[in-house]
Length: 201
Ligand SMILES: Nc1ncnc2c1ncn2[C@@H]1O[C@H](COP(=O)(O)OP(=O)(O)OP(=O)(O)O)[C@@H](O)[C@H]1O
Ligand SMILES: [Mg+2]
Image (cartoon, rainbow, N blue to C red; front, side):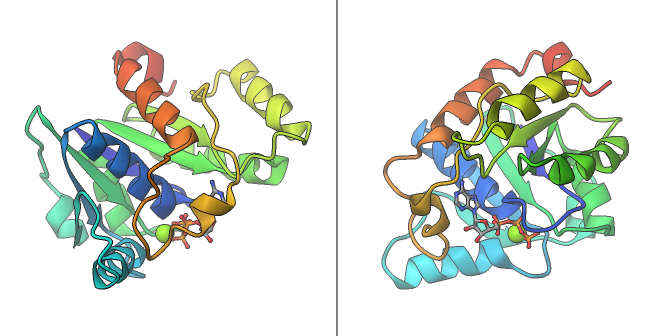
């Protein structure tokens, strides 16, 4: 199985989501690796920094180019999670093409959602799901935006990821024991691998 984290907009928790979902899978005993297709190398430096603190991650993180991703396949019992750069890049297209599932993490504000539609256009040929993250449950957007997206027949996950200091602080360290909302996201994603439920229209 190959999951690609994609968004044309930056700073929407792609790397964080890749690392936490990989941790959730590894803790389920699934052989998991992260491919870092972002030249910024955030996932790679996260893993290196964690290792230097003796907090090694339960999965490997390897840099990957667009060429590495072309023709990438996985075995049925492994999960490959691909982190991609923001914007447009050949690595993004290659990650989308290789993916069994494209995950678009996005913030919950209307301005964030506006930026999701162009991304959905470029992933339209692959099963795609939108993950709402950095959510503040005290704000009305936390409920209104998922409903609006569902009304627009956008393929949105029911589970949302709340903004949490423990998640923010995880960068460059081990993944916390408590995965919080990401454990639920992982469950929903694996339960939802029935293609009809996750395919973008
Ligand atoms: N659930 C969360 N709660 C709090 N902070 C979060 C959460 N998810 C991500 N962040 C923070 O948001 C910022 C952006 O996240 P991240 O680096 O994962 O985004 P990105 O999409 O990979 O960005 P880029 O496009 O620049 O690579 C980081 O500071 C990260 O720690
Ligand atoms: Mg990143």
